[in-house]
Image 1: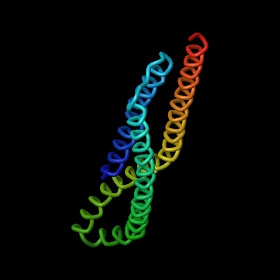
Image 2: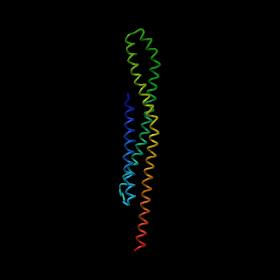
Image 3: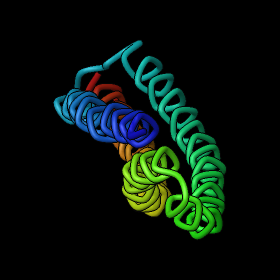
Length: 167
């Protein structure tokens, strides 16, 4: 049953955790190139494209969360149905040993469902905060590149003006 939770956790780890590290390093390299006076060239376009793709992944994570909420609701409903039928099963178990065995096995399944419900609820609660933080990271990264590019352009203009004044 923990398949849904594992899928969500893996997606979050890959798309948020690892992407932040990868993109942060690339943005820092581009900003460093600008500060050193080098023109990063096409790297800026490539990183902006990667940042836009990461934004799409963030939106995809929110959609996956919505699917997880629907699964969560279905699991809660299934547990409620089991709770309603549990009483009748115990009455039937008193009259029939086979019904008692089925009721006993069903309790193990429902215990797994309860664990899945709690795990899924925890992951569902975390996704919006992570998505918001990831989105703010993407905005900060774009702003950082834009500021470094503007400073580079200003230095280039000042350098050109100094050269023109001398010669």
